[in-house]
Image: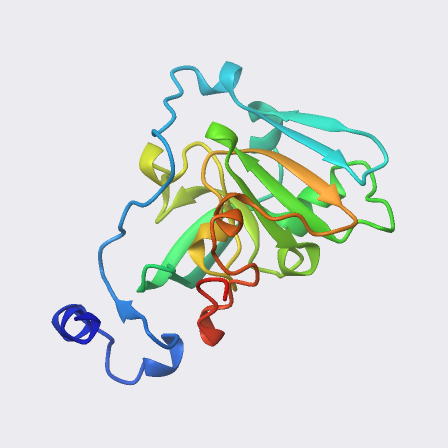
Length: 204
Protein backbone atom coordinates (compact mmCIF):
# COMPACT_ATOMS: atom_id res chain seq x y z
CA UNK A 1 0.00 0.00 0.00
CA UNK A 2 2.78 2.47 0.87
CA UNK A 3 4.50 1.78 -2.48
CA UNK A 4 1.32 2.87 -4.30
CA UNK A 5 1.07 5.97 -2.08
CA UNK A 6 4.70 6.85 -2.69
CA UNK A 7 4.45 6.46 -6.48
CA UNK A 8 1.38 8.69 -6.52
CA UNK A 9 2.89 11.55 -4.53
CA UNK A 10 6.64 11.27 -5.11
CA UNK A 11 7.84 14.50 -6.68
CA UNK A 12 11.55 14.22 -5.95
CA UNK A 13 13.20 16.62 -8.43
CA UNK A 14 15.70 15.09 -10.81
CA UNK A 15 19.19 15.12 -9.35
CA UNK A 16 18.03 15.85 -5.78
CA UNK A 17 17.60 12.27 -4.58
CA UNK A 18 20.66 12.69 -2.34
CA UNK A 19 18.73 15.33 -0.37
CA UNK A 20 15.75 13.08 0.37
CA UNK A 21 16.20 10.48 3.14
CA UNK A 22 15.08 6.86 2.65
CA UNK A 23 11.33 6.30 2.68
CA UNK A 24 10.45 9.96 2.10
CA UNK A 25 8.55 11.66 -0.74
CA UNK A 26 8.86 15.33 -1.69
CA UNK A 27 5.87 17.65 -1.39
CA UNK A 28 5.37 21.28 -2.32
CA UNK A 29 2.68 21.60 0.33
CA UNK A 30 3.34 22.15 4.03
CA UNK A 31 1.21 19.57 5.87
CA UNK A 32 -0.14 20.53 9.30
CA UNK A 33 0.45 17.92 12.00
CA UNK A 34 0.42 18.49 15.74
CA UNK A 35 -0.91 17.40 19.11
CA UNK A 36 -3.79 19.36 20.65
CA UNK A 37 -5.57 22.49 19.54
CA UNK A 38 -3.86 25.41 17.84
CA UNK A 39 -3.07 28.12 20.44
CA UNK A 40 -4.51 31.54 19.72
CA UNK A 41 -2.64 34.67 20.80
CA UNK A 42 -4.72 37.83 20.68
CA UNK A 43 -2.09 40.03 22.35
CA UNK A 44 1.17 38.16 21.88
CA UNK A 45 3.26 40.94 23.45
CA UNK A 46 1.49 40.37 26.76
CA UNK A 47 0.72 36.64 26.46
CA UNK A 48 4.00 35.10 25.29
CA UNK A 49 7.30 34.72 27.07
CA UNK A 50 10.15 32.23 27.07
CA UNK A 51 11.34 30.66 30.31
CA UNK A 52 14.83 29.16 30.56
CA UNK A 53 15.87 27.04 33.55
CA UNK A 54 17.64 23.90 34.72
CA UNK A 55 21.43 23.47 34.42
CA UNK A 56 21.99 27.20 34.06
CA UNK A 57 23.51 29.69 36.49
CA UNK A 58 20.20 31.45 37.04
CA UNK A 59 16.67 30.85 35.74
CA UNK A 60 15.63 33.59 33.36
CA UNK A 61 12.74 34.78 31.22
CA UNK A 62 12.50 36.66 27.94
CA UNK A 63 9.49 38.74 27.01
CA UNK A 64 8.33 38.78 23.40
CA UNK A 65 9.74 42.28 22.93
CA UNK A 66 13.13 41.21 24.32
CA UNK A 67 13.17 38.16 22.08
CA UNK A 68 12.54 40.28 18.97
CA UNK A 69 15.48 42.52 19.87
CA UNK A 70 17.96 39.62 19.54
CA UNK A 71 20.09 39.27 16.39
CA UNK A 72 18.51 37.07 13.73
CA UNK A 73 19.64 34.78 10.93
CA UNK A 74 17.94 33.48 7.79
CA UNK A 75 18.49 29.88 6.75
CA UNK A 76 17.24 27.81 3.81
CA UNK A 77 17.01 24.10 4.60
CA UNK A 78 15.22 20.84 3.81
CA UNK A 79 12.79 19.46 6.40
CA UNK A 80 11.68 15.86 6.86
CA UNK A 81 8.60 14.62 8.71
CA UNK A 82 8.34 11.18 10.30
CA UNK A 83 5.06 10.72 8.38
CA UNK A 84 7.27 10.44 5.26
CA UNK A 85 6.99 13.83 3.56
CA UNK A 86 9.98 16.05 2.86
CA UNK A 87 9.90 19.70 1.84
CA UNK A 88 12.97 21.14 0.16
CA UNK A 89 14.44 24.65 0.24
CA UNK A 90 12.32 26.07 3.05
CA UNK A 91 13.45 29.48 4.33
CA UNK A 92 13.25 30.43 7.99
CA UNK A 93 14.20 33.45 10.02
CA UNK A 94 14.79 33.59 13.74
CA UNK A 95 17.30 33.65 16.56
CA UNK A 96 20.14 31.17 16.23
CA UNK A 97 20.21 28.93 19.29
CA UNK A 98 23.90 29.65 19.86
CA UNK A 99 23.12 33.36 19.72
CA UNK A 100 20.34 32.99 22.28
CA UNK A 101 22.78 31.45 24.75
CA UNK A 102 24.98 34.54 24.51
CA UNK A 103 22.14 36.54 26.06
CA UNK A 104 21.36 34.04 28.84
CA UNK A 105 23.09 33.27 32.15
CA UNK A 106 25.90 30.77 31.57
CA UNK A 107 25.11 27.09 31.22
CA UNK A 108 26.53 24.81 33.88
CA UNK A 109 29.24 22.40 32.71
CA UNK A 110 26.95 19.39 33.09
CA UNK A 111 24.29 20.73 30.68
CA UNK A 112 24.04 18.16 27.88
CA UNK A 113 20.35 17.92 26.91
CA UNK A 114 17.47 20.30 26.33
CA UNK A 115 13.77 19.76 26.89
CA UNK A 116 11.70 22.08 24.72
CA UNK A 117 8.46 22.94 26.51
CA UNK A 118 5.54 24.04 24.35
CA UNK A 119 1.84 24.81 24.72
CA UNK A 120 -0.47 21.94 25.82
CA UNK A 121 2.38 20.52 27.95
CA UNK A 122 4.06 19.18 24.82
CA UNK A 123 7.76 18.45 25.19
CA UNK A 124 10.57 17.44 22.85
CA UNK A 125 14.03 16.32 23.95
CA UNK A 126 17.18 17.18 22.02
CA UNK A 127 20.88 16.67 22.78
CA UNK A 128 22.46 20.09 23.24
CA UNK A 129 25.08 19.34 20.56
CA UNK A 130 22.38 19.35 17.85
CA UNK A 131 21.08 22.72 18.98
CA UNK A 132 24.59 24.14 18.65
CA UNK A 133 24.38 23.50 14.91
CA UNK A 134 24.68 26.72 12.87
CA UNK A 135 21.17 26.24 11.43
CA UNK A 136 19.35 25.44 14.70
CA UNK A 137 17.17 28.34 15.76
CA UNK A 138 14.09 29.70 17.45
CA UNK A 139 12.14 30.61 14.32
CA UNK A 140 9.40 33.20 14.03
CA UNK A 141 9.24 33.72 10.26
CA UNK A 142 8.72 31.29 7.38
CA UNK A 143 9.26 32.37 3.77
CA UNK A 144 9.55 35.98 4.87
CA UNK A 145 6.26 36.06 6.78
CA UNK A 146 5.41 35.54 10.47
CA UNK A 147 4.60 31.92 11.28
CA UNK A 148 0.97 30.99 10.92
CA UNK A 149 -0.76 29.68 14.07
CA UNK A 150 -0.85 26.16 12.57
CA UNK A 151 2.91 26.16 12.09
CA UNK A 152 3.90 27.45 15.50
CA UNK A 153 3.18 31.17 15.85
CA UNK A 154 4.70 33.06 17.51
CA UNK A 155 7.89 30.99 17.96
CA UNK A 156 8.92 27.43 17.18
CA UNK A 157 12.11 25.47 17.60
CA UNK A 158 13.96 24.41 14.46
CA UNK A 159 16.29 21.39 14.61
CA UNK A 160 17.22 20.72 10.98
CA UNK A 161 19.06 17.41 11.36
CA UNK A 162 16.19 15.60 13.11
CA UNK A 163 12.72 14.49 12.07
CA UNK A 164 10.45 17.50 12.25
CA UNK A 165 8.59 16.53 15.44
CA UNK A 166 11.71 17.58 17.35
CA UNK A 167 11.14 21.15 16.04
CA UNK A 168 8.52 21.90 18.67
CA UNK A 169 5.81 24.40 17.72
CA UNK A 170 4.48 27.07 20.12
CA UNK A 171 7.67 27.09 22.16
CA UNK A 172 7.40 28.44 25.71
CA UNK A 173 10.41 27.11 27.61
CA UNK A 174 13.88 25.57 27.45
CA UNK A 175 15.00 23.28 30.24
CA UNK A 176 18.68 22.31 30.35
CA UNK A 177 19.51 18.93 31.87
CA UNK A 178 22.62 16.83 32.54
CA UNK A 179 20.77 13.70 31.38
CA UNK A 180 18.29 12.75 28.70
CA UNK A 181 14.55 12.69 29.39
CA UNK A 182 12.01 11.42 26.87
CA UNK A 183 9.69 13.98 25.28
CA UNK A 184 5.99 13.61 24.46
CA UNK A 185 6.22 11.57 21.25
CA UNK A 186 9.21 9.58 22.46
CA UNK A 187 7.12 8.33 25.38
CA UNK A 188 4.56 7.15 22.84
CA UNK A 189 7.00 5.08 20.85
CA UNK A 190 8.82 7.47 18.52
CA UNK A 191 12.56 6.88 18.18
CA UNK A 192 14.61 8.95 20.60
CA UNK A 193 17.34 9.72 18.04
CA UNK A 194 15.05 10.75 15.15
CA UNK A 195 17.72 10.67 12.43
CA UNK A 196 15.92 10.83 9.02
CA UNK A 197 18.88 9.33 7.16
CA UNK A 198 18.80 6.24 9.36
CA UNK A 199 14.98 6.08 9.26
CA UNK A 200 14.85 6.26 13.04
CA UNK A 201 11.09 6.68 13.11
CA UNK A 202 9.90 4.44 15.92
CA UNK A 203 11.33 2.60 18.88
CA UNK A 204 11.94 -1.10 18.48
